[in-house]
Image (tube, rainbow, N blue to C red; front, top):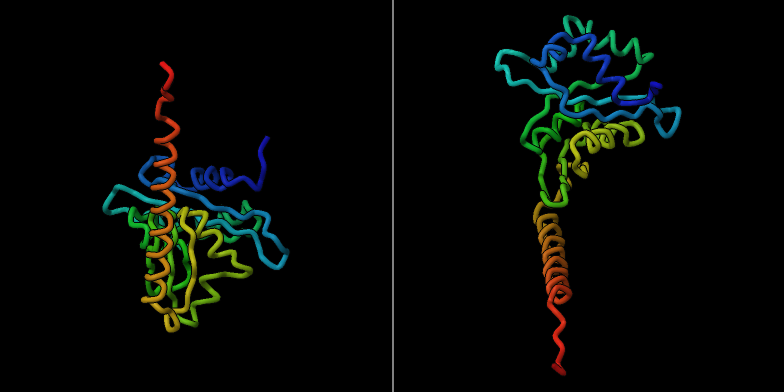
Length: 196
């Protein structure tokens, strides 16, 4: 039984249309799909992150094909669903910036690596594009990367205040972890019989 809303369907269609994926020259690292958006005013959309170990191969170009022929074949099969093929990166900041395509990102600040929280700074004219209609673009980018993404306007962003907030949150978390470790040690201590 196959569901047309499953992300695996998109993966299989790319395997069928892109020889480099089938030959394992290009690999699909992650897929985020919203086949049934919350409202009808937003169309279905998929983001697919691809990578290659071959220096002379462009993984995104391989998925798009000459004049968009390969990706258009997948789009046609999915009845016009919007698909963004993006380049995967081992660097989280680069990966997040790529995932928010087609918006142009000014800077990605990794505020908390442990909690995987990032602030993305954009110019005012890129704000609505980065967020997307009803938040779809940023929602899919967050799912694709596994990071909580907070889009901010670069001009009004206060670095000092945000850094202080992040440090305070990290300190609270460290205290909680220390308290939890002490509680765990107390539980593990053997109970001694004072009468013996």
